[in-house]
Image 1 (cartoon, rainbow, N blue to C red):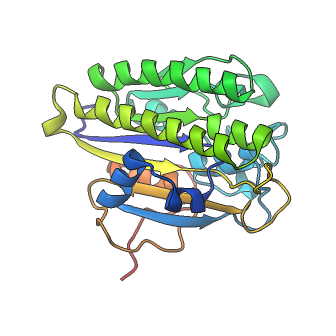
Image 2: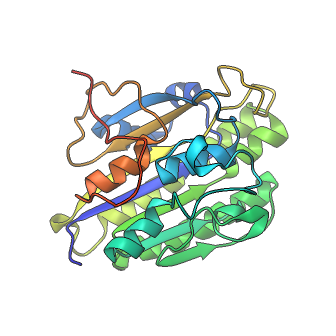
Length: 280
């Protein structure tokens, strides 16, 4: 199925919105500058932990539908509410790619996963959950994703980067957290550069979506329901997204909905979200 539209979603776990607004992150800022950065409030009833939030992001449905309520996915209804990579590959025959270097349930059966059921292609490594191990995993999958995005046929991709969250848990949101964010921003830049280097880039329309799942308290950690923990964000740029316009009241469920809209597709599934729209 030939398609000039392509989407890259980069999931940056556990990254506080206020740090994006104060720390130098030139590559993330490039996406924001060409499009927007908008806060996301984790919805009432959704725990502010990774499992429920990422499930909401990639299925486009609320926790009441997908039923992922913790970092153990037991009891999920992901077969009825699948992730966008699976829908795109299974229903539309698109070439989809998943890269995960830190958290096994996204790509494996650990903890009743995987969240992503049937991407066309997967890069997965698991060196462990410490900041050092997560950083190594992020670097490994970034290198592989660079190669695939630069030279192979990919219609939609999701790349997960986890070191910011791991660092927050182990060290709080201090200097090491800032360093992890800077390293992650550099990896975002490499992924963007890989897309820019594609041989047919001039004929392709790419949408870039960056999203985090939750925040952290300053001393590190989340899940207690404070405002800072329940504040996430979405940044995006691409066709149909107005640079510099205000995009307000976005929800995690809107990410998957915008992926489908950017590709010009209407899947035969339930969606609780809608494509991003500027505030008039």
